[in-house]
Every structure is written in structure tokens, then in C-alpha cells.
Image (tube, rainbow, N blue to C red; front, side, top):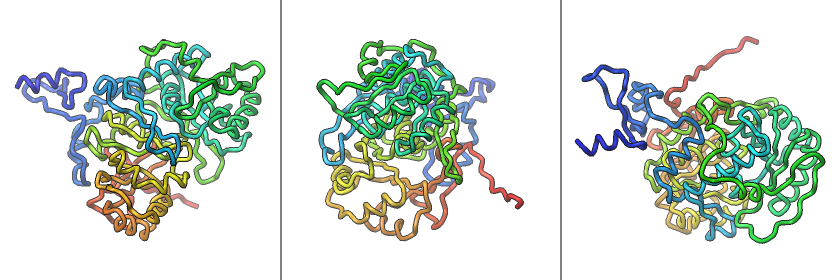
Length: 426
């Protein structure tokens, strides 16, 4: 039919045709096959992921989202937990423009494909495009702002960082002062400050760092073109990020991610999430954590879905927890992700709003106590969807299904991933 032919020829086609199969034997492959239960795995893997028409890179995820829904809301960023009804809003077209402008500013500072950009900040509206821009033109290296100065310096040096993007003095004075000393120690070429969400007026002057450019990122980005990157877009096998992880030793290490790793993992996460184009995700974890990037940034962007970003403290903001159910109602939150302690805390807050939009609550990062799972189900009517993953393997590697709960299990392996249990001789 003509309508199907038109979909096949469009850039955003949900289906495709295997070009290497003889005429008459070609079969339809879907970018979004059914994935609602463990029985769907074999059917999904009957088609190679290479035939799914996935984005080439993380940058391409945003390009496709902006092409598909240019005026669609990408992010609604809350200033803090108390100001939850007055968010800063950006569309997918605006997000792509910010990535271009910030990426070009980083290039102007000397960042190239094999150079890392450190990011040391609490969450703020400018941080998401800054991280995605760093992946678009170089390698993003998000860092935990609570790390000691010598640990920050060691990770910046190990990553080969040339530039550090950090929370500015308005946003978090402690982090800004914490960033200056490592910048001097490592000999960075630029230190760029982020402003609070919705900041206006003239920002405070910044301390100078000998031999380095010190400026507000928004000021540098405003002088750059926002309609394109000044360098070639990343390829699938290019490095996208260095995420630090303590593992079991407590000593921070860097785990390298390629664009292909992040794209495929984000796609499989999105595959099992809420399919509705207008389903809104809540993001309240810090962006130095892979869950925040993969589960609540890239996975929704794969379907061009909106995300509500909590303020700088995220789930650690008492005001956010107190107002949580009203936030779910206000933004019609459909999906969220958190750790067991978050769900335990929310179970203590009476449900004082319509939360019928919430259908997917993902939990991971620590063992889920049965009491928390039972209490959450009783409290909300939504079963927790337990998963498992690790930074070194991108993010998520296994998930459960709300309709197939098994106590003490993290679920089934993700499509196209292999998991083995190995015994280690003493």
C-alpha cells in the first residue's frame, strides 16, 4: 500500500527491509518490536540489531528526535523541589541547537575527538546539553562533585581532559571552588561555569586561573553557530564517555563507552519502557551516574519523549519528596527510575494526587528489600520493575517485567547481551 511505502521511504520509518536478502525472501524488520514479557526475547533476537536502523551515535539520537518532533518538549527542568510548578522548557529542536553551540565552543577551545571534557556539577538545565555536546565533539567525563579534590584531579588527568565544565558560584559555590584547584593542578586549558536553571541578570565575576580560559559556558556558546557542528559528527565506534566507577575497591576507575554501546543500551531500555510518544519520564538522579544518562535521558530521546528533570538535589531534596505525587499529577509522569531507598522514602508520603499516569517504576543499583517492593505496590498500585547493570557494561543488562515478578530476581538479560556466571578459583 502507498502508505506503507511512504513509511519505508521516510527517515523515521519504524520498519525496514533487509537489503541483503533475495527479492521475494526479504522480511520486514522493526525498530520497535514487542517487548512486554520474557517470551518476546527470542523473536527480538531473530533479527540482528544491526538491521534495526538505530542511530549512528548519541548525537544522532538527538538529530532524529529533533527531526521527528522539532517542537516537542524534550526537557522540563525544575529549579528546585519547591519550585516544581515553574519549569524551564526546551524543545528537541532547541536541545539540538544547544548541543551544536556548546560543542562548537568546546572545539574552539581545542577539544577534538580524543579529548575529554570533565563535567563536575549538580544537575541544572545547562548540564544535559553540555554533556551531550562533549560526546558529540570529544569524550564526556562526568565526575561526582562529592569526590575529594585529589580524586577529581586524578580522574581528569587519567581521562586526558583539556576542559572542565563545573557548577558556577551561583549554582553551587562549594563545587566551583572545589573545581579551581584541580584545574590548576592538572593544567587545564579552560574552566567553564554553569548557571542555575532559569538564571537571569549579570552573573558574578569568576576567579582567574593562570594559563586557562575561565568563562561562563552560556556566554561562549552564544557566540557559536547553533545550526550545525563545526566538526564531523561522531561514528559508532568513537569513544563517547568515560564514566568513573568505584567497583568493589572504592578506588575510582574510568569505564569507557563508545557511541554504539550507549545507543544500543538506550534502545533496549526504551524498547521495554512506555511506548506512548507523550509518556513523560522523571529524571532525578545525578548526571555523573550512567542511569541518569541512559535510562532517563537517552532512552526517552530514542522515542522523542519528554523528560522532567528534578532540581540540583534530585531525590535528596526534601521538598521534592514532599511534593512528589503532585509532581506526578502535574506532569503526568509515566515512568521513573530510582534506588530502593528512594522508593522506601516515597512510601512514607501519602498519595495526595492523581497518579494514574504512572505505569513504570524502575529500581536498581542495590538489592531491593521485599518489604519495600510490597509496600510500594500497596502504596501506588504499580509493581516495581527491578533491573541490574553496571557502568562497565554501559548501564542496564537485565530487567524484570511488572507482570512477571519473582522475589529476589533482577529479571531476564537484555536482548543482544550475553551474561554468564563464572566461578573464580581461590
